Image (cartoon, rainbow over all chains, first blue to last red; front, side, top):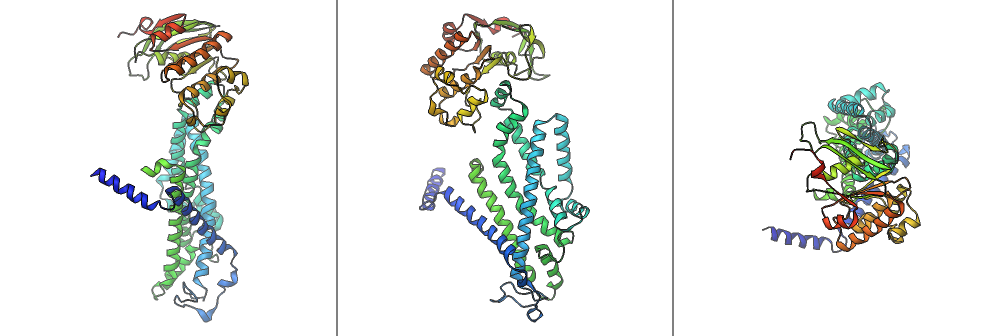
Length: 290
Length: 206
């Protein structure tokens, strides 16, 4: 039975790899995903604001070839608004998760290399942050920092590092018990030198993968914060704003106001997620066998 | 110089059984000593304690009457059984030598390290070739004692002979003290001036 399964698999792999092997396929896929994300960002950032000027002669139109996503009650084109909103979301996601990942790296390495009381303290903080419901914490921080782009960025950045910090801490602990670290110490190198030269290079895969897999969370949390009214201001074309506005008109049957932006948000989040998973397979091939 | 283990007792946990009890031995510089004994008797543990990698529960390690330095460059260097574990897999071999400041032509020549190995990663070299790097990086100026924990056990006989020839040449030239752990009695006879049987100096009840 297992023999047959193995044979079957070789056949399938053989067929699939007629033109490209798995690695190349993954790389091509990752590049494509990355291109789509950059494309949406650029399209949103570069398109002029005139495209979403209010036009009451066009208000509340259903999806058509002229307006693929329909128009809202102010007659603004929903496609352009969605792309502009996603572009803001991508920026927030990128900045917030970069900051978060750097915090995770520093905290994780400090916990693993520092004194034992420091390790206990950091673990306690991680438990604390993880223990509070994410959305509540985000709302509190964003509100305390004065809402707006700043509030959202700070809120998302200081709440998403915990998981990655734990992973990095355990990786560092494992590397630190290796023989070549002991040898390096006996060769007279300081703890700092060992961290920079021996340990940090080993953290690169975890760091990059953790960073990319943090994007989807950051984007989702940004939109939900904005949706709840604690995030970006209403004049900014953010996905959260679009979705919360559309709630008012849903009961009148204007389904396209929520459907297309929501769908696009899900697609973007999934794209980031797949990008991360695919990069993981390339950078850390062992995980592909799990 | 002289390294001394004085009444060493060691166990791995507060509740685990003693592995070493009241073990004492001393080695002079320029002496070649073999430490032999059956598996699981604590040879590697003892050599790790003497090199300063583990701290004994009782007793002390003295170097010329003073305790081993805890920080900084250690005059006692340990060479492990598995060179592939003792070298960072993400480093090129050149960096391994640079780490201890041993990236010098005379050292590489003495140990038969070829130039084109330097640009390779550890997984691209064989065990014997890697072990030469481990020896090379331990042979800097401050080294007075070399401890070898079954350093040639996993190599084939020809490579073993090569490595030991190179080792002995260096040890003699620099008058280093050598302590080797081995199961190979013939090898110990060939290399060492003196043999220590761990079961004879360990006063643990067996």
